[in-house]
Length: 312
Image (cartoon, rainbow, N blue to C red):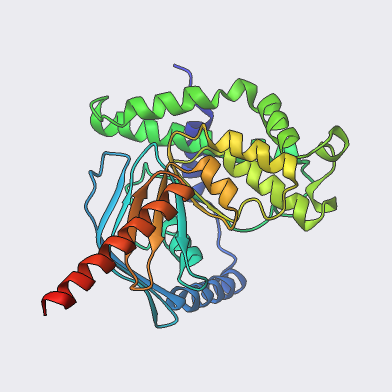
C-alpha cells in the first residue's frame, strides 16, 4: 500500500518524538513570552455565542452572538447566519466593528467544526527567498496535506460513513495538485504580475505587491470561509476587474468588507448590516438592493410611527 506524503511526515514525527531534546531555558523563556503576548491580545476582543448549525454541515449559524473590543460593545445578542454558497458584503458605520467581526470569525472565538477552515486576508506575504509562484504553491501544498490528514482521520474513525468525506474528496479533486504551478501563475498574472516580477523573491517586492501575493495565496486555497477586508486597496483597475470576476465564481462562504459600492454590487449575493443598535440585519441581493430595501423599510416604519401618533 502506498503511504501518502502527509502520513510519512506524521510517522517520522512520531518516531523522533521520543528522542527529541528540549533546549531548556531558551525555548521555555520564548514560550512564556509568546503565551503572555497571546494572553494580552486575547483580552482586547471578547465574543460569546452559541453555534447552532449542524456540526457536519457547511453553514455557520450562531445565536446570542455578542462581540466587544477593549470593553466597548460592538454587536449585542445577534444571530450570525452565513450560508454555504453565498457571498456577503459586510456594511456598517466606521468603527462599528466590521474588521473585528471578521477577525473573531477567523480566529474561532466561537469554535467552528474542524472541517470549516477559515482564511482572513489581513497582512502582506512574508519577505522570503521564494518567488510569488512558489509562495502561493507552498500554501496550497500545505492545505492539500491538511486535507489528506483530515480524510485519513475520518476514514480511520468512521470507516467511510462520515458525510463530510465526499466533500473533502471533491475539494482535493478541485485543487488538482498536478496543476498548482500554472494555475498559480495565471492567478498572479490576473492580479498584475508580469513574468519578471513572478521570478522575484518576495523579499524584493514592495508591501503593495506582497499584499497581492497574499491575496493570490488565499484565493488559490479556496477555504470554506473566505474573509476579505478591503481586498481592492492595493489593486489597479484591471486587477480589481479580474478579482471581481474571480470572486463571482466563489461557491463557498465569502464575507467582504469594501468601500467600493461597484465592487459590492458586482460580487455580493447578500448583505449583512451592523446597525447602530449593534444588531446584524440580513438582506438578499447586492449593495443597490440593500439601499433600496432599507429605504423602503425606513419609510414604512416612519408611516407606522406617524399612524400610531395620530391614533394617540
